[in-house]
Length: 296
Image (cartoon, rainbow, N blue to C red; front, side):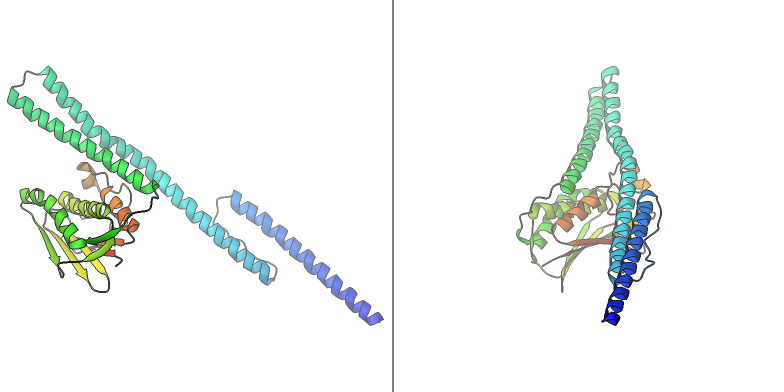
């Protein structure tokens, strides 16, 4: 009996020590966590006491710390990018507006002939149309990044949509002695999608080729294990960064001098993902290839 009591006392004593050590370890972890949260460092929590449950908790806390850090870095990057792009947007909007005001002032204060006035008014019209295009792009992008409405979809013939979009740009390419070549393995390709959004995606990609290339645009449609639509053209600006081509407001120096907002491809990416597809880009020698994969 005495031996049993002694064993119980020893067990209780061991448990008390064990609980004391766990409590001490928890206090240490809590203190280290406070330091990590209050000090900008890359430290993580480390265990000094062998306990399975405690080690699992540390692992989860460290994962959360890493996740929060990545989010903070991403937020900081986006904030810095936003500050820069606010400046760029202001410049983009001001340029056609300032130019238009200058031509208006010229018409009002100069004795121009009717023919000269018509020429200046045509320039003003083009500048204001460009301003409208910029404003619409900014508004459209803000809408698609904040609106979570459910998209209505229906059965659509992708071939027909592509051909319709191509027809809208026929004259623009012809004026530059360029053309759009549509290579398709099938004459009918039915997908579940939204017609207006799908047209906007294809329009943006064709428009991107028109503005930033000097070659023909090759559009290819294939249907094997999945449905793939690709857009291929020569690259004029070899400094283009493929890894960031779909980023909001991404522009190369050449693009910016042309007044490009950098939203066309970003909008195409947002819309493609809204429809459940994926979009990617790659450089093959001097060519840019943008590929969309649709879910059947």
